[in-house]
Image (cartoon, rainbow, N blue to C red):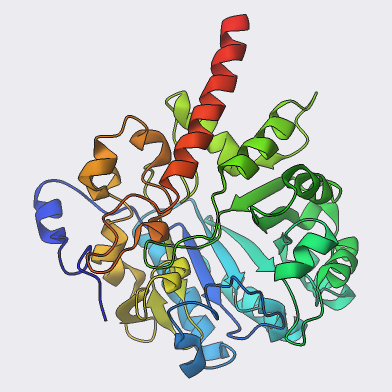
Length: 385
């Protein structure tokens, strides 16, 4: 099954003839383990449209990651990149075990060109963190992002084990083992039914250097149960009104920067090119995995690191659509005065069948309300000064 836009409706050849050139990939997301020890009820990998995880190897083998390392190194050389980022992901990547992760990261470091930086990040639920794994992360200077959805009572409504038990106690234990210098921050999928300020303050209690707030993955075929604007604006006010900056919240900082005419840094807002590629456990080269929430096969490119360089997918319509800025937006979005700030919202949230991804975000009203609120707060302060 395929959508009508961008594939096959987007004419990448015409874009190139008109002068567009793809942005090289900066982030390689490596799916080192296909399974997870949690059963979060909103997970786009296991509970939504694409179920390809069932047919893939459970864990990535060494030959596959070595090929991925070689391809990553050549991509950096081909495009003369000062550095790239390797993101270890799953499923739950810690299920791969300390020894396998040690070997994998070591192979990537060894393959990477001298003089080019390789930053390594892992995104984990932290329930399996132990001293042995932390020692591996220290050895390889791996930054660790942890998924947590607020206080225990809120987190455990959604982020549970397969037997229904909550995960918050184990996450708390894992975070207690994580040294500050390796802590990249917290990732929170918001629940509009939860107490927003209590959620933020629970996350803040771990002193994260950054918090990423994610809207639950949804689209026009599977819309969200509730709006998120009141939740987001309440957290923004609590964060913005603090006497000092307590942490970085990328969504809010991006909206503020975009309102002032600067660039965004994330897929959630703004029109900056997305330069992320995914390698699955079987070596398949895929588009950003959040597209699994749209329809079966939405991430597929037909390419594999066994046979192909990453450049082979740089001109894929799904890559181009996330790199051509306002040209990827529908007429409704382009006519909206906020489109350079919201950027049409997260690409996965625009999907509707039939037709594909050329629609406003299913969270359009929420994004407009958040942007308007942030602009009002900023304008009031700028006028006062």
